[in-house]
Picture (spheres, rainbow over the protein chains, first blue to last red):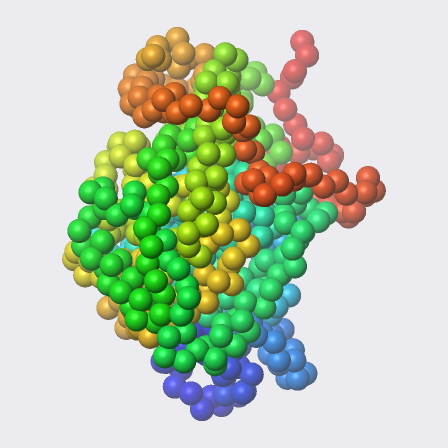
Amino acid sequence: MTSSMNNLDLHDLGVAELAAQLAAGTVSSVEVTQHFFNRIQQHSALGAFLALDADVSLAQARAADARLAAGERTPLLGVPLAHKDVFVTRDFPTTAGSKMLENYRSPFDATVVSQLASAGMVSLGKLNCDEFAMGSGNENSAYKPVQNPWDTSRVPGGSSGGSAAAVAARLVPAATGTDTGGSIRQPASLTGITGIKPTYGRCSRYGMVAFASSLDQAGPMARSALDCALLLSAMAGPDPDRDSTSLDLPALDYAADLTAASQQGGAKPLQGLRIGLPTQFFGAGCAPDVLAAVRGALAEFEKLGATLVNVSLPLTELSIPVYYVIAPAEASSNLSRFDGVRYGHRAAHYTDLTDMYKKSRSEGFGDEATRRIMIGTYVLSHGYYDAYYLKAQKIRRLIAQDFQTAFAQCDVIAGPVSPTVAWKIGEKGDDPVASYLADIYTLSSSLAGLPGMSVPAGFGAGGMPVGLQLIGNYFKEAQLLGAAHQFQLATDWHQKAPGVSA
Amino acid sequence: MALTFEDIARVANLARLELRPDETAHTLSQLNGFFALVEQMQAVNTDGVEPLAHPAALLGEVALRLREDIASEPNQREASQASAPAVERGLFLVPKVIE
């Protein structure tokens, strides 16, 4: 096939644009796949990928080309993406960023993976992440850190750091991520891309290596809200036989909603939208450069017709201890399956069964996973359960109720995603509590199970990207994506590319 | 309330982890730093508040659904055991459990 397009430009196209070119036949999925594959190899120093297999990816691309040749025209057919390495895949190894799962090969695909494959997306491989999705800088990967494409001495955020870096550097047009306490939104913010964590239960958790089961949620990461909408439409939906917590709600065609809304938009397409600003999100804890970018974005929303109202989320600071009790408690339970018997690392030398468990687990888990297992085991242990886990689950309800009080006064809630721009790799040292405190703006909506997203909103100190967080009420993904889409029609922050992407 | 070395040893054993002696002191100081943060929770009045386990339960009863009790997965024994550390004749090998 002769391409009428300049292949050098393919990586500048987003999901919707690539799909249009594929549908028009100006380029084939094999050509697109080969182009991105070459870029991934050229930019391997970023550390974004943990597994690649050109044969697998090209076979999927050929299958997509055959569907295109047969006349199929569906929104994602032939477009490449890559998966965070916590989604299990038959065709690639799955490590969850841990030595525990080095060389692990799943006998099945995660539901999200198989749904995106059925939609015709081509998988380019597996993306680096913090070990078992525990971290906010991707520095807890057992394999290698990920560099931020905007400044390779800085972190890309985490835990979906490989996903964020790959999309920002234009190594992939889109990626999957998972978000337990901010792991889609925070790296999206720190790398200047768009990402959405849907309502808890919107996407199946089947085949996501479990971290904290009552919080984990899959979502798309891409350059624009429109591209996220296209992916979410294929990822979401009930999985009744395989995930008992998945919501019994059909997936919507989120992208069609956006297109319809922008056609009837007018000069003030967001007229009537009330954006709530929690006073606790705009305090002294947030760096001035981040606040300036966020306020600039909010002014743009006002120009589009939205009104800003002050709301209160009084337990925002408490969301940190509540989350860091609940998530490690669930993690300690989930990670008990790694016993060196059925899969995963087994120590070479041991005396008996208990010693084998202990040595295998101690060798296989990194520092942060070990710390969280210790915390979780302690708070669930006899005599402490009521004071910690149960207490945290009660405050969790109060936090969720506070959001409902706020949503009586507004349609969406907005604020920063992260209190600072991306920090230098290694800068935070070995102080877990300091890292946990930086999750303050994403944890409360995770605890409540609400959908949230990060939208590129400008740049802060050092020319590093800043994201605007939008939080919606339950099941209001379409409203969030719609607001973000209108903002992106009026601004070009999401189109800025880091120098490394050239 | 601060944790002690004994607590760390007890919890590590419950979690089937083996901490090196130099790790134990470090872990103890980190966990005590962490639990100082957690103590903030005790100031919140939660009398009469039900714990929230599934976020959607805020909107109403969430019944965790059950599927029909029928085999729905094909037998993938070989694929499932392909990543196991030690397998023989289709069985997982472990150290002797009963003396």
